[in-house]
Length: 180
Image (cartoon, rainbow, N blue to C red):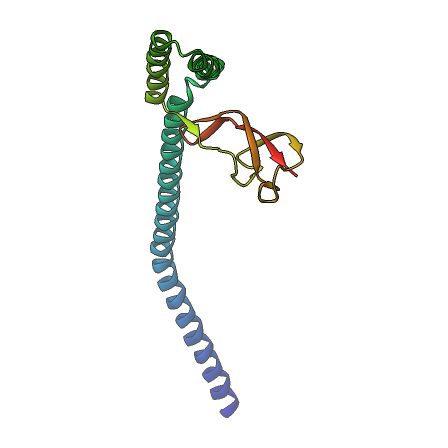
């Protein structure tokens, strides 16, 4: 009988173990769909947040590009007018030499009006003068000459053509002669 009891006892333990496993599986199945839905919800929330962030970046980028386009849209026209500004500078320097005050005043009025109109569109002069240190990022060296003095070595000796920038963008670098 002890063998039978032992077998019965093992059978009862197996049945109990199987029942416990079944109960645990049922509980797992009950929780599993809820957890699956929660995981899917989290996944969709993450997707939504990423899509929203991507859209915000797109909106900011296109807004910035639009502002840049408006600020530099007139760049071609302004580039075409830069030689006219150079001609005004040459005309003013020649008329000053002749001491003809009436012509000088007329040329100055027209020159100032043109400069103010271009300034209102964002054009600014790049300040460069003799004695400044040469910087390849903001100057264009057209030639080098022996420096007239030791303090002008590696510095700007002469400004051949003025430089201009439109907003923050340099549209024409100042052309300079540097001393060596």
